[in-house]
Length: 116
Length: 117
Length: 89
Image (tube, each protein chain N blue to C red):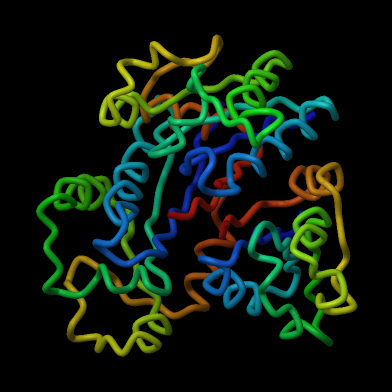
């Protein structure tokens, strides 16, 4: 048993499938064991749509709140935003905008990479 | 020998993921590795013992029962189980345990490799 | 131990874009991932594998790029054990 660094990637847009919220629930869940695993959440591709400011986050606010309180990073890939035509000023402030290279470094440094 | 964890989020019959998970897990166990699996979301439909489907020689639940028989540890997400009316997994094949995300966290801490399907 | 990108079609592109930045990437195409065009890695150091069963049952044997190596589940397990798995499946 050992503490793990986990990256959870979010690849689907809200709300057509449940992954946008169940992925966050799992991300929080990963940190809930005795080993206090570390987690970062990364929004890629269609997942970037979740970071748009106007998205209704009623059912995800508590997960995001928990993740932020424990210092977990929530990041969205700049290239994905660009591919989807989302302007950086349209992104909600809780999401950090990072380059694909930074996403790669985050993933490269993680023990496990889980996709939702 | 390695410990390999699996997170399975899709159900049987509709997608190929359960079959891929079974095939990788079986090959891993046959090579002497240890397998721990967590069913999440529709993944919790995989081990229902009343599955029937004449077109299929071996049903998903039988594949997972085979893994359990070979020593795989399988835990299903309780919130997902109850959300789908599966009543704490009372209709599950033997050996599949209903738990929660803290069990998944424990699998994450314990395993050397993690596959998500 | 390098990074092993496990790629299906639905999220695969997100993973393959990251694999492009990864000098030691190995990619395994599984399930509908075998429909992904692997020619983008031609001439690069990225090693691409495809699960043989998934290729055969889709009738794609002659359509997969030449330098893609077909593997069975035993070989896939060895790759999983020998590397870090980056899941995009």
